Image (cartoon, rainbow, N blue to C red; front, side, top):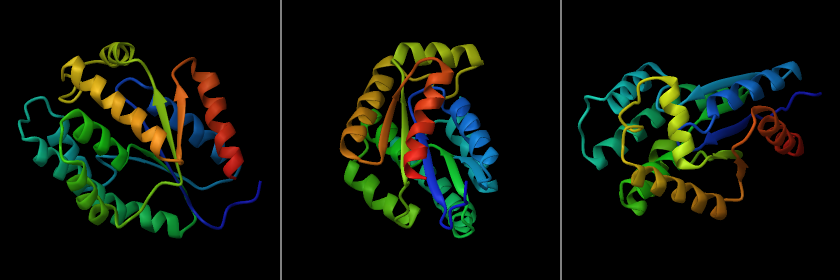
Length: 206
């Protein structure tokens, strides 16, 4: 298959335990086999500063207000845009990113009640207006997802929040999926069929 001249920015979203990491790895492997240059990253993280911020955000001893949490996510995002995403897109890379500003809309907006208008205002500056070409929302029932997360090991600061919070987050994601055409909802299930569904969407774009 011929390489694209322009990069493609694909993001993966979902509540805890939705299987994003597994599906990103599978898609990256499939695209590389086809000859595409693929960059896998995540946020918060993906840069030196982003990794430090990630530690603050997810560390179980961290205590902060909702607005501080939101700004830290935005700071990590701004670094990722400047240091990683824009340079990679200019080179024609296929970017697979674990979470994006949609996570802030769902987690801090719907989950914590942070002003949506403020999130959008700060977000425009942090992202420089960069929007994904495609977003895969891996949807899993909240209890099921949290059980999966527990099996991975110790829960982080966000995973430890009350069930009601995670339910609000899922509702936020479902609302985003209804409002954004770039969203493709993939229901949780066996790994193989989920991967095939994702590939089907990718093939239509390529």
